[in-house]
Image (cartoon, rainbow, N blue to C red; front, side, top):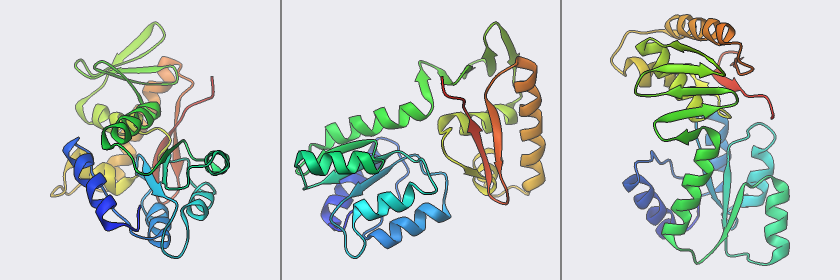
Length: 220
């Protein structure tokens, strides 16, 4: 989110080269609207100086309904500005001009915190998902997941603080051309909940009515 099209295009270009899907916004109102409508974003890079609603106001509003990691990118570089941004709920704060390599390194660090990547494993709370074998482990107990179970859980583990809409799960697990419906997702969520119960995990799958699902990971 940046009112400077050149800065925005530069970040988007390099982020896409890193394999990220990128949505751009040039003003605060658009960013806030996107945040409300789509709950599966993994990260927001947010400039402070924006047309209309400034970045600090956007951040304050976003924090009323979302825990999405936010990296503030700003020409305001005083200690007071950085403290203000962090106190409003920013997860990181960079000043302009910036090095694109450093920005992408911080993006990787923030997205890893959502679903910690350990080699070929994803972990959250007391759960560890081994991707080559599709095995899910909690303590000494483990269970093998079916292909669809694995794909659904991997989406949730990759961004456990985000609410993943049902339509996103369908498109990424079954494909855009499939005839899968909401009840297909509900069936596999039910399967996964039973396996979490079998493992005795403290992690659970929460439902946001009429929207989608997210992982509920207890604080350590």
